[in-house]
Image (cartoon, one colour):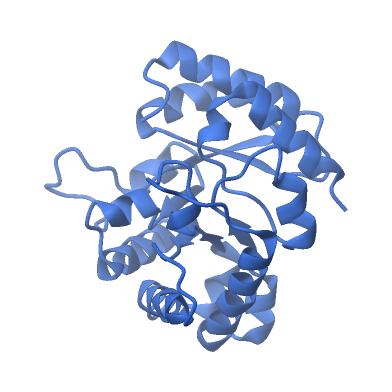
Length: 246
């Protein structure tokens, strides 16, 4: 729920759009609160380098669901991608079954998906891998392989997110290990070839200081930034670093 005014949302979006307009290799997406999407869409303009996305959608396409937002409403705004299964939604009680239904509804509405997965703790015995496997298998149950090009995975190690109490830093090696495992599970769902083409983003604490490490050493296909996306200066720096990463 940031920022809290439309004025601030427009200023933040315009600042990011200005930096993104100079990017050639880096794709920039902003997942804004749904209440701002229509207004920000007006600022996008034809050929904008910034793609707008929704933070969530409902399991149903329409109906008596006061306060909720359907994937079809999102699509009607001209927005073509949504987050699903964000760690904060899971912490609020969202189940893998609900996430699975959201994905199915979003796909039927023609949206692309960024599915967020990740464990709350990383243990030395490797049990966290079972948590990842279960999340992915349940969330993508009956996922049509022919729609694999609409799927992006964001690995969110909850223990490394900036808002987690007692958080600790994830390393590029932590991410790479999980990325390889995620692609292995995906191969059993959509096939090995398509799994290898599915982008896997780092969704822990992404900052200007660690961007190059996760993109290069960690081989992340992108970053899902939280706190630093609210700082025009920091987010601009992340974009610039990503643009020149090799």
